[in-house]
Length: 449
Ligand code: HEC
Image 1 (tube, protein in one colour):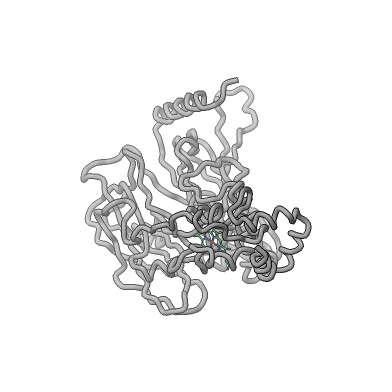
Image 2: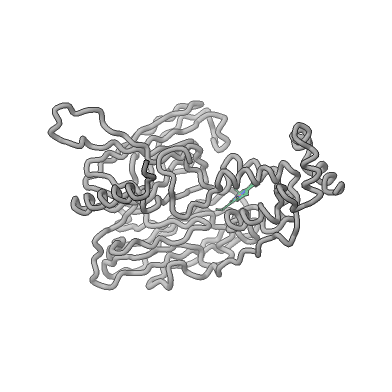
């Protein structure tokens, strides 16, 4: 259809025309004529199913993203920007390096290489609609009030909502709650989320911390995080998280003003293990790799290294880099202890890179949960090595002032460099047994030559 072609030419602009001029035009003309014909990439047939699965949790009316991608009419004006963000792997937000270390995760929302190609081709071909009959059924969203973990035994709410101004920069707010916990308890599942629809619109993400002693440690222990599209944490059988009597809950909210003054409320749901039941495995999340004195010169990219030694065998279940505006990249590697302590020639240490976030994006606090069969299983004495890079040059668009030296600190204009690592310590026998189970699993799944 001629009209389709004209529309594309007008809206997509010269970069697109140049690209088309250099490519096989007859194929394009034909495919757009047929709409969903053989070989043509169309919104209805190829792209909508990808958006349905990977984008619309955030890109729908009333959610956190700036525009909806639910329909063709909504998506079409964004075609060029969609192509750029998808090809650069900025969207969906999942910034772990796909070419390094462990590549299998739970709840991985990222696109496959072929999905990226499909979207790019769709845009290059003029972003046609295709045949509406090919459209997938629109995605239905669960009532945001439902708990993914099931009905919580305890719900901790804010005493009163926080009043978010209608405009201005991102707001970062701490709210400390005393839920009046009378006794120690073990938690089997945790879920944090906004408490009402208007809060869903403005809460970009928040973290929930356990504060055992506000004088001693006002920041407390990281418990859980809410980010859009994220469900709760359900611990594996026979494991749980300890919350001590008297513990307070701190919500650290990261809010985006959305044009109207908003009352913001968030909540934490806890499912408990039966009273008196002490789980064999206690999962927890902690900082690793903190560097006491950060030294980030003006106008430069700097690197810092921090270390944590595992006192016992451990199973690491997730990795989340934590840096501020100048964060550029972070890697987690492990340095194994000598296999034989009595070795006559203690050879070079065996080192393995587990994960890198090579294109860290400030503002996206993403936890990368390893799939169970590849989650790092590490012997006692392993050293976890966290390397962080900060970009204090003008090339970093989040850099408030590349002329300043920057040190460590909690304000977002200061810097940090550590990873949140979730782990479970294992006893030696349990560790050995799991290592054997992994080895026999690898034997049965690897192709035999
Ligand atoms: C977890 C939520 C989330 C998911 C999933 C997500 N986005 Fe986004 N997207 C956002 C937010 C929030 C922004 C605005 C802030 C930013 O750019 O980081 C955004 C920005 C964008 C932009 C830039 C808009 C502009 O102003 O130029 C494009 C294009 C985009 N997303 C496309 C997509 C596509 C395509 C997918 C799926 C393949 C996707 N996004 C998945 C949350 C999400």
